[in-house]
Image 1: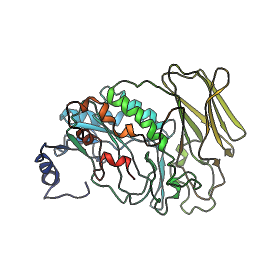
Image 2 (image 1 turned 60 degrees about the vertical axis):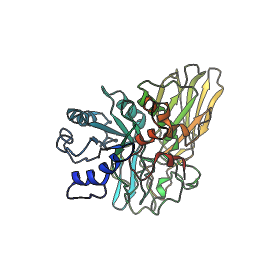
Image 3 (image 1 turned 135 degrees about the horizontal axis):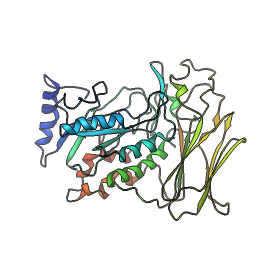
Image 4 (image 1 turned 90 degrees about the vertical axis):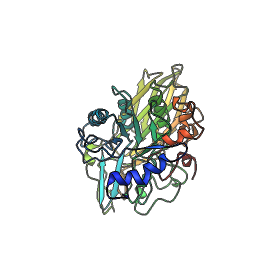
Length: 395
């Protein structure tokens, strides 16, 4: 929380928020689920009775290792021992480029997809999953992070993790659209300046993908794939590229990441797709046969040299294109400033808007909705409480 009212955290939470909300008709029972990363994961909840649970912000690996659920399981065990909740974090990437904050966390190898699947497949799924983040693309922004409530939680409860987080340098893990002018000093947010910020957000393919995993998490069953979709993302220059006029220099930890195009296929069981082709510039072409149907296919295509236009296609058994498209960003190692952000593209043969309305109304298909007023389910999908769920469809 940004401010504490009263003589202590416990008193402030009770007087400023919990008691007023409980006095409403019908009452709302807020849950205080903060992210306090400095605490011992084995006692974070048990040593802080004011909290209703704990959230882990750890959604990216350190160094070159892969992400695991080790910390999630430890937090969860301590929370359950106190009969409280655990909320995990999931995020597509992390890169920040400011004088006071210039580093990245390794976001390779389909981090977002693998993290979602690992959390869903935990022995006991987290009570909540916080998506980091909705609009963290620049300074002085109020972050709104989607929260997918677990299917067994009450829809009359409201989650509060942080109240109006602001004045934090952007970290590139936004999945929502960029509606306004990006703050000064954050032009690296867009992987190419040629594309106006208000016309295309280079991470919104992750937003489309998120809808699939929210449904999976809330239902406990992997949703069927009803149309061919291919997602691919990559950085706009090599890790070894040298910027000609960047006073900040390359980000710390850049050696942890590699040059690759990452492709994820979502193909229905009845799909005629038989081959994936990925071309990078005029020198690199890789093909993959025996594509998984009815499941997610993950492909990593390393690249070397000068890069170029990224072209991805899915073909049937006769060599005809089912899907084909180019990435929004041309890879080039001739750069003025460093940009380790990702460009993400979606190829689809169905109507798949960047900002899906069904994502924001997903509680309507959940058991949580049964028997509740039409606006009650919205309470379970908010974290930074500056904006309600309805704001997701508003500029």
